[in-house]
Length: 197
Image (cartoon, rainbow, N blue to C red; front, top):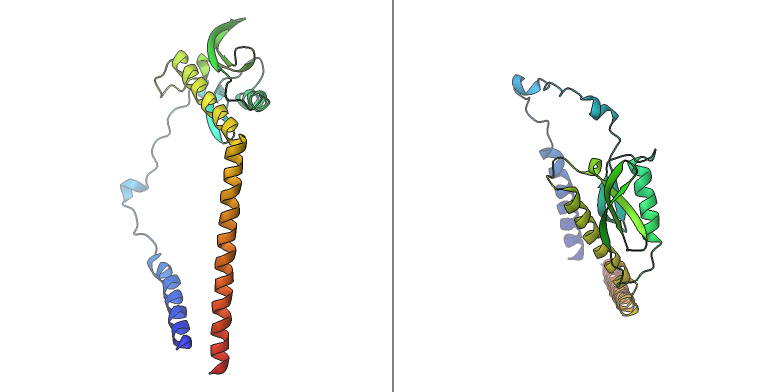
C-alpha cells in the first residue's frame, strides 16, 4: 500500500516538473514594426555630465535620493557619509529630526538633522524632476522618513520587543524540531513496513 502511494507521488512530481518544460516554448515572432528599434533620445549636455543618483539607505529603508555633487563629493560619497552619521546616532526614540533652509557659500538648500547634528543636505539639483515636489517638501518628507526609521530602530532595540522576538524565534524553532521529529518517525515506520513486506 505504502509503495503504491510512493509511486503515485513520484509520478506526480515527475509530471509537475515536466509541465513547465512543455509549456516553455519559443514565443511567436514579432511583427516587423515591433522589431525596429526606436530612435534614441538625443543626449543633452547636462545628462552626459550628471552623476549617478545615490539612494540614502538607512537600515534597509530609503530616506532620500541624492543626485547632485557637492564640493567634489559625488552623490554616492554624500550618501555614504550621511549613512555613517545617521548610524552613529544613539538608538533613542526621542530624537527630533528637523529640516532647515540654509545657504553655504553659493549653494543653498535644506539641512536635515537633529537640531544639534547635521546629518545630510538636500540641494535643488537633488530633486527628481518627474516628482513635481518642491525642495522644501522633499526635505520635510525625508526628515519624516528618517524619523520613522530611527523610531523603528529604537523600538527594535527596546528590551521587551527584543525578548518577544527572541521568544517567537525559540517557539518557531521548537515547532520546526517537532515537525522534523514527526517526519523522522513516520519515515522510520514506513521503512519498517516496507521491510516487513
